Image (cartoon, rainbow, N blue to C red; front, side, top):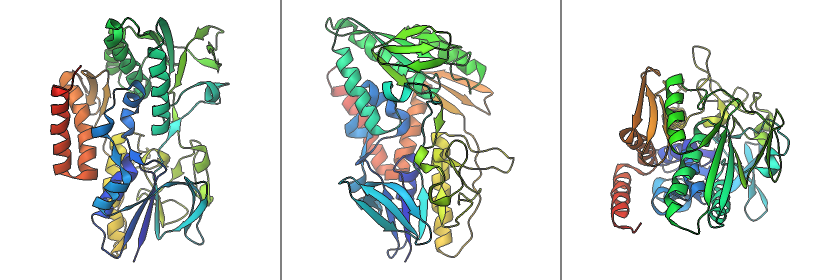
Length: 402
């Protein structure tokens, strides 16, 4: 009998737990350690924050899903690893500390925003790193929208998360224009680089910027934030940007508590350093994947922190680890980038394909963005469940009142 413990119920962790749970022998055990009760796809956290996320159809209960897919949900959060005893130290929701034995351990806790030690950013900004933070953001945004008059929101970071949040909030604000009691939002999207989506092709950045300008989002490029307080932000040039709410979505890193946990090797971004097989460099029975792992490739590069990369790594490790449990050797993970899709509102998206040589935009590309989410649902719940959810979503959109 082998016990596989997976830490983190995000895209990578949940997909791995689902695939392994449906494939292992009856005497083997798969346990998913996750503090939340429900799974939300991280690329859609901005929709939770803006109040446009469909909790009924687009979230998933770990407890019931695990029962149907062969894994057990253990509600808690990892705090340490005892590698000699092969035990995971877990902080449970009731405040108690427990230990959980494992034969194979997979760490897939994702990444968080990097505040770059900016003064006041942690204390006075909202983040979208966890479902809990996204829900708290919606509580504050909802109160702001109901307060009336003109309100201002600052968003630091014009990568995919910041850009999608700005567009979603602008869309919500536009829909509320007919309500005389709703607030009117001024949205400032602040970026230190000279363009939005600074790590994407220039043409994609230009298309995204043009769309944001149509939504009346104020773009503050080449602007670095030096400090944050309750009233707003101050740039490195001493300019004050007052705001009623402030978001930080600039850069990512693995959680600070993950650095060198259990004596495992980590890099400057707190990511666990793994081999191309996804096994950690210090322990062949511990694996890591997703945004919290630095995964090398044969050409010397590392796998980028993308949802598609987490998905493919999970599918690969499910097969490779299952083979290892049957006496086979691990296989290396080879990643091929399938491009990038960024949603700008409910009816528009921009994507790159063919190694960034082709830029697509429009409503059909927005359907492609939705398809990526549906593929995630297919992996974790199967084709039939995914199909039922698509039909239910279409019917709900048709029959629910505006």
